[in-house]
Image (cartoon, rainbow, N blue to C red; front, top):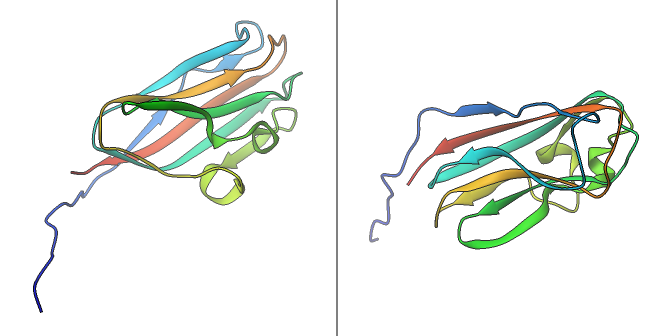
Length: 133
């Protein structure tokens, strides 16, 4: 039987934390939260709603990798549930999105898209990835 083994391996991972998005500074639109390098495999993304927000339309997604951006690529607004304090995990809590993404064509970013400007609340996004090629 012919071999088709791969030597691509990674023995470490990085954990990123975004700056806090707070109701006092967050206006409607898409915000770049974290830079993602080429060859990064995102294994999970978390949202921490530290203080309940007065809006529901917050999604977490990605851009770059020479592809069309996906504003809700990790979390749709119903999963972020910004009115409820707590942690949400893209891998275990998301049904309609994907918890992983491989940036094999170029660099990218984790993004937050806010449908409206909000005045109260605070969220922080975390991302775990390994670089492998």
